[in-house]
Amino acid sequence: MRIDHFQLHNKITDLMVSLRKSTTYQMMARPSMVIVLMLLTMISFAQKERASVRKGNEMYRKGSYKEASDNYLEGLNKNNNFLPGAFNLGNSYYQQKQYKKAAEQFKNAAQMATDQKEKAEAYHNLGNSHLKAKHYKKSVEAYKKSLRHDPQNEDARYNLSYAKQKLKQKQQRKKKQQNKNKDNKNKDNQQKNKEKKQQDQNKKKNQQDQQKVDQNKKQDENKQQKQGEQEKKKENQKKQKESEQKKPQEGNHQEKAKKQRKKKKMNMSRQEIKRMLDALDEQEKRVQRKLLRKKKKEKQKGQEEEIEKDW
Image (spheres, rainbow, N blue to C red):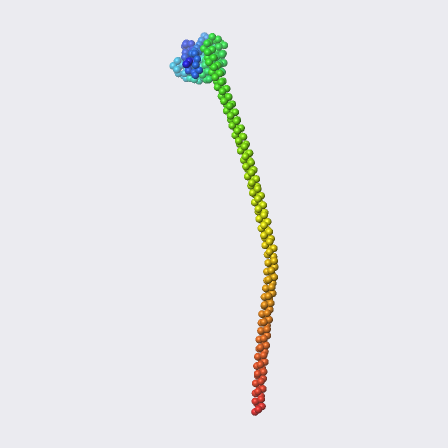
């Protein structure tokens, strides 16, 4: 098992910091040291800038990378083109695993540097920062730039090979994932097509079933309507027949009632005649009785007169 050592190493002066950083990677290769030398070419610079960087270096050596960053930033605020401040600030960010910020400072340092060696070292550390952030393509580009400025930098050459291999692995994983996604998409499409086909079949079947239900319903309605019409027709025929049968009966009833009234009238006439006859008979009897009484009186009167004559 091999271990890759990506190191940030500054020349030890009153303004430069020294650092050895080891990191274990899954990919195994021979040990590699990235020695970054910051050579001060500036003849003089402001005392305040130097003081801020020196204080930052003290914090850096103690492992207080946050405090070191603050001091380096203070120096850069006083002179934003101060190369040691930018380079060492990149180192302090790197130690805090703030690789994006570290990359920004190493990029600035590479632009500030005028010496080819300094540019090579800045781009080298820029490549390390991108590599830590797993930005392999940017890391490859940075190592290439480092080698352009210093073709003898074997550590940069090895790191370039390592970064290319990681980039290739990433691309292979990406391609594999894309193929997997494509396969999954194809499977999803197949599943969707299958589901759609099943849905269409179910829809068609439901429509057919519904049509059958509607047809049966319509047939039942027509049948019920026909039965209703037939029953209504029968009922009308029955009523008509009953009506026709009822008419003669009503006529018979009327005739019978007429006869009964006539008979009753006749019966009443007979009774009246009888009463009249009885009344006449009674009247005649009364007259006869009256006549008899009168005759009787006359007879009695005659007898009395005869008696008187005898005397």
